[in-house]
Image (cartoon, rainbow, N blue to C red; front, top):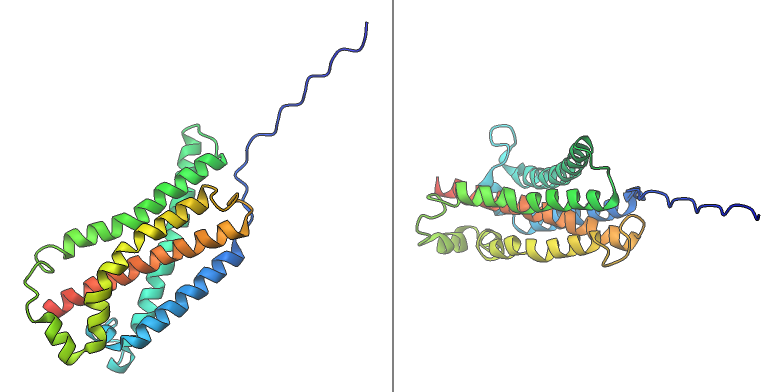
Length: 219
């Protein structure tokens, strides 16, 4: 009798190990900081009207406080996405579902959609109701006469910023789910996903700042 056939060793289980995307994260962070700086520098009246830090910050430094506020909100949204994704993966593990790459991506996607849609959805309901629903007769003319640099961001760019969440979400989800290669190891996929994620957070932060400024003007 010949030797008994050796059973093939089972394939290793799928693991969600990801090559740390520090480089892509740094690129996305620099792009976001430069974008915020450019927006604040070209629309100083918006941040004076918002008055972030009123009572603590001199009036001349409102644009600086606006920059810090928008950038901090952007970073906070990204950290919230990372923490929320990790928490959801952990909860799935406690429920008996191991942290495979498929489930990690599902968790990241679900939390991302909450990040992109929930804050603006809630804020549009709360602040976009009777306050922002008041007649806008004269607002555009008043801004044009007194704060022409603010008119562009508060009225013209506002819907564009909100709608930018659609292509940003498409870029993020396509990158995460392999359109540009395995996002665990592909630097191209990680970079596009990081830029889309940070861009989403920036769009949310800007929209919240715009709404807050419009509400403040109405008050």
